[in-house]
Each structure stands twice: as C-alpha cells, then as structure tokens.
Image (cartoon, rainbow, N blue to C red; front, side, top):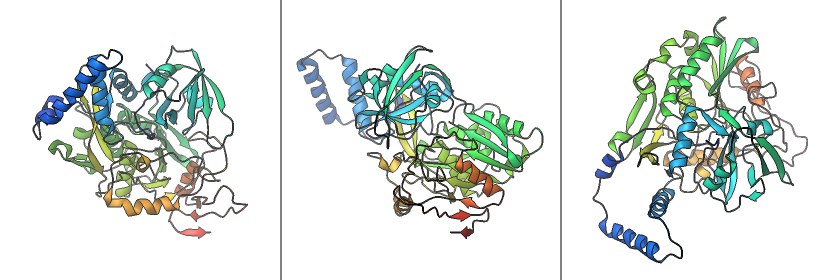
Amino acid sequence: MSGFKFRNLGLISVGVVAGILLSLGITAIAQRGSPLPLDELRQFSSVFSAIKNNYVEPVGDKKLIDGAIAGMLSDLDPHSAYLDADAFKEMQSATQGEFGGLGIEVGTEDGVVKVISPIEDTPAARAGIRAGDLIIKIDNTSTKGLTLTEAVKMMRGPVKTPITLTIARQGVAQPIVIKIVRDTIRVRSVRSKMLDNNIGYVRIAQFQEKTGSDLVRHLKELGAKGAPRALILDLRNDPGGLLNSAIGVSGAFLKPDVLVVSTDGRAPDSKHKYMANAADYARGESDYLSGVPAWAKTVPMVVLVNVGSASASEIVAGALQDYKRATVMGNRTFGKGSVQVILPISENTAIKLTTSRYYTPNGRSIQATGIVPDVVVADTSEGDLFRVPREADLQRHLTNSQAAAEQAKEEAKEAELADTNKIFQFGTPEDFQLQQAVNFLDGKPVEKAVLRPKTAAADSSTDKTTAGGNAVKK
C-alpha cells in the first residue's frame, strides 16, 4: 500500500487526519431527521438517466454513483470526503502505523500535488523533501491536471524500486530533482531520549492505535534510572489521528477523571464529554495509564507546537494549557477544531463526515484559530522557515465566531519568513525551538521570535523571556 495519506481538498490541509475514527451504522443515520426530498431525488434520477443514455461514451453505474457521493461531500467542509476502496484502506493503514511508499503526506493546490509533511525517518524525509514543496513531475509525467488519486497511484510501487520527483520550492528559482527509493514505511508514533541536565524529551509524530501505551512505555524507560526533573513533549508537525489516543496522552500528565475535551454538534450522539479515564481512552482494553510513573504528573513541562500541529495534537496542547499543566511554546497551531466520523457505506468504502466541533476543558473552540502558545518561538534563530496554510485558509472551512477577533490579532503578529533554506531534524542540537524549551525549563532567557522581514538588514534584536514570563531584554 502507498505511503501517501491524502484528502481531496481544493487547497491543501496540513496533515488533517480524522480527529476521531468511529464505526457507525449509516442506516441509523439515514432514518433520522427530515423525510427524504422526493422532488430533488427525482431530479437526480433524471440527470443520472440523461448521462447514462446520452453521454458520448458509456459510463458505468458505479462510477456515476461514486462521483455523485464525492460531489455531495466535497461541497461541505474541507474534511468531509468520500473514501473509495483505496482511500479507505489508506486510512486504516495510516492509523495502524505501517504502510509502503515514500513517507510523505500530500494534498493538492491549484491542480498540483503539494507536500503537506514528510514523515520522520522515511525515504522522503531523508531525501530532503520539505513541507510546502510542489511535486510538479513524477518520473517523466507532469502532475498538472492529475487527480490526487492518480498521482498517488503513480507514486506507488514495489519496495526498493526508484522514483524521481521534480520539486518546485518557494524561494528556489530552479526545480529540484530528487531521486528516492520506495520502502516499507513504519511510522514510529513515539520517540524519546534524555537530554542534558536530566530533562526528558518525548516526541509524538502521529496519534495511532498504540500511541498511548507506547507513551507510557517511553516514560517508564526515561525514569528507569531516576525521575527526570522536567519534560518536553514535542507535537510539532503532528497532524493528529485518533481521538482516544489524544485523550490517553493527555491523561498521562493530568489528574484522573478530569475533562480532556468535549464535542458538540446537531445530532444528540455528537454531544459528549471525554474524560481522562479508561472508558474514553482504552476502548475496553487494559488501562495502560495505570502504569504511568508518578513524576509524569508533576514535573515542569513544555509542549512544543507549530503550524503543522493539528487536530489531536491541538486537543492535547489545549488540555495541558487549560489546566496549566504545561507551558505551550512554538508557533500558533493549525486550527482544526472539528470532529469527523467514518461511516461505512459498503464493505470497502465509507464517507468521512464532520459531525461536531470540539472544545478544550475551558470551553475554547480552536476551530480556524488554533492554540496560541504561551511563549512564541520561531522555527530558527533567523525566523520561521515556512508557513503552510492553516485551517482558516481552506475553502468552506467551518467558522469560529467565538474567536474571530483573536484570530485576526494573532495573524497580524506573524513575522515574515526567514531568508534561509536551513534544514534541521526535530530533537537535534540544531533544533532552535527545542533549545529554547530547555532554556525555559532551566530558568534561562528564551529567544522568543525574530519579527523582521526578509529584506531587513542586520537588526537582530530579540524578545527574551525567562521561565517566569518576564521580558528581560529587548
């Protein structure tokens, strides 16, 4: 199976994996609500018959029905979609954490395939593919005009076979030709290590089925030789995933049975409060949070986020921020505050349908606004490296009247992009935001952001903040 998770969007969406994956009976859904619109269904039948009998070439019934279903969903919000057999299988593989391909998540922009995010430690990431890259050619074929499904199928292939991608990158005049060898992609949801000064570091790349239990195992390993004195939870470029995993991750650092997130929509079963207890995160399996080390509930903590942190990542960051359990640091997040359910319509197809908005424990909706960090820190010491469109940039996105003014205020603060092609891996010594998180936990000054245009001269003044939150130098 391919290593490309995709959505049929007019404008790309940053790694927006469904915030919740549920299996609901579509028959029950169809029987609720108002009666079927008979006049409109007759009109549909007339169009179906006209195409079937008069189109220049024969068209199969399944193709027409699939197109009609996809059309109904594509006119809603950006995250509602029809999942054909390939897309449905892709989604199931992605949440299980193992699939074949290059290791990139893609969308479309103006008819061209666009990289949403490379997956860490995959052929694409090692080859230098970056978020925001436009894939203009696959081998010798232009991607202009291809559907996302067609492009993904072209990029599939047996493990160990080569493929050549031609990339257009912002700020680079000439196309970049990158050769990659396909491989089996095994997404490591959780990674950890001990930093200097006895600070634990945990990175979650995606919220999968085993993310919660994997997190507990990593926390135990970090504390095997003594409890860390502080902890950094890295959620940057984490596109989200399974809701129950987000609840479990939040619960690892919060008191038992507190509210983690609530959802609200039109249907009665879309209104729910999700608590930090096994009923909501373990899905009837063993209570893996019973093994969380005691220090994980109390040590000073920083959560790192950026524009690529979406959905389940924002649930975790929002919960830890609301309870003041952690200081959120980095860039404003993507702003996907809606919940999708997966409704099977056959054995191998389904629809992904937005049914509700979610709210942080304090009742905040982050839809189209995102989580605003307590301490803003740029990607690098020279400023942000890239700016991927957020939820608010997507066509037909759900609005958020609760925070429209706050959204405009935060957008006005954003700096120009840094004039640099510097590439770094999260969690390495070159990781500027991680360095500032360590400084914060050590009580040292933090370089928050460099708000300057690309054309600025040598003005390198910085905002600096200590762990106490006081500006000490300008």
